[in-house]
Image 1 (cartoon, rainbow, N blue to C red):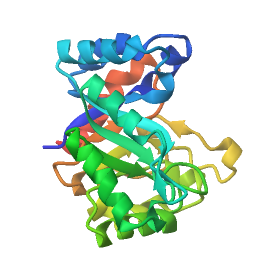
Image 2: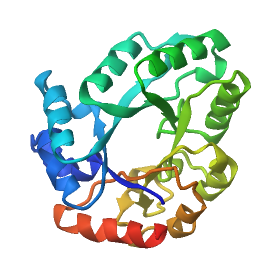
Image 3: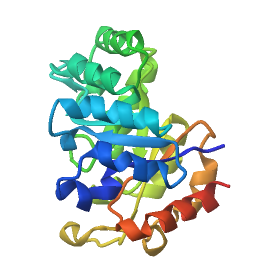
Length: 247
């Protein structure tokens, strides 16, 4: 059974207006989902790590953690890597997502050390295709995942459906090629504009991506996180659409 989650980007307007992520977790739980993905860039003070954990526990939410940093830099783990993992432990997080960085080029020992640090803390890790030339192309992502597999790494993969459009890539082709690598799915739809400046996310039913045919192909163990800004009064509607697609 596919588990549905909400990434806090869904509440971007509220976050930009100063609402803390911890204050939004009860709202997420109120939509009947059991997963929330916290975003590091919106954590404004140290005490928020503890508030997030306490609120998630009180509302029966499992947490994922999105860190907008490269996993590896210059052939080594990100200098802040272990600190990010410690933040995740403090919040009671299950999985931490990073940008892929140059992981396709690092030594096997670096990946083994990364896996060891995560495993010692009871965490899983994923890398993501983002919207940048460095971390967002299909060729780069496929090479990163192939290298991880070749050296026996445990790092998983967060497939971001909409981000391919910001790189001018074919989302359907990327999905078909990378399907067996996906361990987390970030769901969004886009207006399909060829001019990147005009490209934007849409409500799920309004965009150009046939996401409904993709979700049933995912392994049941792959959580599907909605990850795009949604007006507060339309979140329930969007959750219902995802539920219908994975039923």
